Image (cartoon, rainbow, N blue to C red):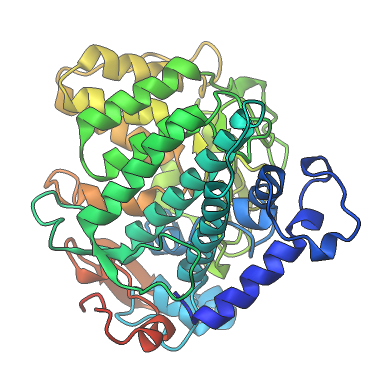
Length: 463
């Protein structure tokens, strides 16, 4: 994706140090860990457990989910003083949706997922050379299922940014993202169609579901319910609401625990515990400067939309210099949660039920979630006269619940296809107004210049 030689060097570096960087119990100590090259199932599991790969590294550089979508969305704003005095030029450009926002600048939002895909290909290629014994089969299955999950997850994230919104009528012609199938750095790089991109994501998640356990040893490892939940997200992005409903339902049949927000401290800086009961799989976002708590101010209209008895208003948000900032990450840190959690699955299940005119299920899902979010004794179950009204409620709560979860950009893109929910985005910087109208080509970000220079035959996204 970026120059093959550089990727190969990084790959060698990671492979030879992955064991020593991983959690101590993941792999037996070897005489010289700096020379370790993965060759066994345990070695490949150690590579998968490396926090620099699974997105749970606890630093702005080690997240797995691109921050570019959240950066372009409508959940936040930055003050003029921060925009002019503290942001890098590329982040300024992204913030106001410039047509070519990062000229000549390397883009972690592209590089990181593709580097991770290459590492997953190392694991998958290596596992293909191992014939597991009966005693090894479960460990082999977990490794392969995890690598497929991670690879599919990365392709999905890339598709939300660098490919047009999935449209079943044009997907076989629309350009998707390049698909890397092996660890061979000489593999030819071409853009797949959008249909091929999503077909691969779906196929790999379905295989992962057959291989992964229901209960992972650590929540930085994928699991069957996490794969079900993620596949429901994929189908929701495709507006395939029947399939999104079915996979959300499969997830909730295994794991449906919700936190009772009334048991959490409203005064704690980070109210949520890491790996809490709702987390199915934990990872974090790559964090561009505009999304750091120091600069990121919560959209005022969004903040004011919470009821006074809604505990999310005090658990998610903390006052800061006359505004509010978001500190409600399920990662229990200043790093935004980008994984899969039960609350999202409930909302997907509810939305799809409403779209199927099943108001009973839709409102039951919504109220089951919201009663755990409000002060005890204050919640009055939501009602609706029509499925359309129920859908309005669910989409409103979806935005309020999944703040800074890297879901909003995709929601904006898919809802822009529906007249009732289409939205032109607005920013105001130093008195100048910037807009991102419905249907604008800038809802698909440009492939970075350095990638295009290495692969000039590859078609760029239009402007």
